[in-house]
Image 1 (cartoon, one colour):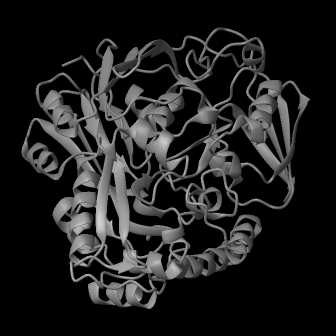
Image 2: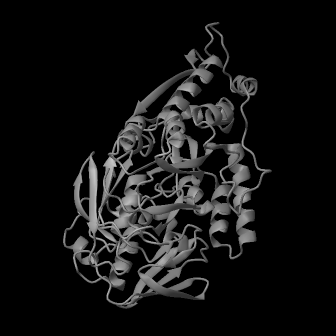
Image 3: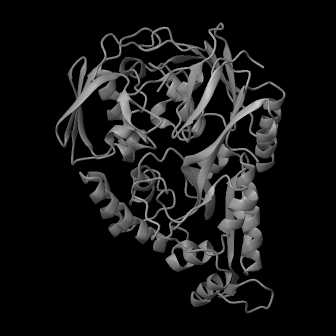
Length: 511
């Protein structure tokens, strides 16, 4: 085991704070993760490893605490002279990890590129209410909004990049230079991301001088490496049998709690078979959430009822998506013209069988088992269900993000606000609307949820949208995710769970 001095709750789902028990010499913290980062440019991050690595390599204007409050990071303070104007004052003498100065021009450049459609930033929709961003002086940045935008602060934790370096040809995706507590020392694709202390970081010095993110795609292999002492920390996704075994091992501490994510079905509504809400409802009614959550995820997750997390201020127990109902699904298929005319147990229409492909990625054994279980349920109901299981890069980049899927099982994390799950994904033309869903009524309510100035008005808007989505079903939320973290008790820090995680805890920095 490496001589680790801290621990992290990763995936931006759960949080940890630390109390030092000793002042031993700083050393390496080794963390096992399931997938490699697709990029180390925070503006282009799409996967959890990219998010957690860039959280260490870069700093944003603000940093979110475990209670989801924005606290000063690069920005020492801010003010809102009116609902559509935000003015941020940067800390003096900020530097990137290469020693070059970080000024308001870099902040302007970062957000300007994100807002540029041609740049294809996956989170662009989070920033479209920004109509202008300008440098008032080297330490002052002014954001002008097209309308009041309630979630803005929650999204200003994105890392700031260097205007001079990028315009000079530097590739932040492969050779990142940020202003975070760590800097990149090496990156062996598919193997490890190695980081070390950034001597130019403005804030508290990390307590660990090196952090190693080890990529081990197979969850059980990752758990075994942890048990063998090759890793200091592992976290979700983990197979239920590994979770039970590790929880019973007194050598390890653990955190098991609700997260800020969902596991969901993404229907490709561009596919002719799935264009009808009635067909999407029928397929949804063949998803046995209770069995998936209790038997496959073994109670770590919770059965979901709508697109709004139960922990959210916008949640309503009265809004419910369809439940498991095989006979009801068959009735809907019949209404759509599908019946077993051949007597072979497979529904057909116009001589063509009711065939659909269920897909997910291979790194998460729970999702693989869920897809295989769904396949069996679908087939028993007369659907010729096939499966497609591929590695994460192929599944996400070459399949779902190109809208090549039919019914895909995946997850969405870091849902710090209802807007985070809904706007970019389910508004017409949203950059992460991979299923091609479009409904003017939903578009309007999601806009209202962004611009409303009171939480009561925002709640009303999101609940209206959730009711429509529970009928239209471009998404079917299978479960509200739980989170599991295991760490060696040899770590000289006391681990305490909080409501949301960030990767800086792994190097001993406090929220």
